[in-house]
Image (tube, rainbow, N blue to C red):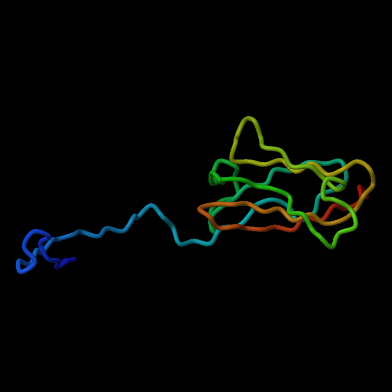
Length: 130
């Protein structure tokens, strides 16, 4: 790419600069999603992580996300903490562990992961043991 500008000291003199524009090949255009089950039984726990679509669902393939939280629902009668808690995995900081409550409270939680300034969501339903 060529950029034409004028010299600050002599405005009659045009200055041309050449720039090379490159595309980062390591960035993928594949859609991302939060990997993990959509249903979780009471008093059970599962790992959730961000993954590129088309990749094998293995925790080793997880992307390093900025954060993952349980979204607050203003219309809900109970806070999300009544249904489950979310903690970061200590062995693999790309994985978040959702632990369903053991108080027989059934409902839905919405997980929100942030990656490169974009938010990704997944709804997880807390279901009975049997």
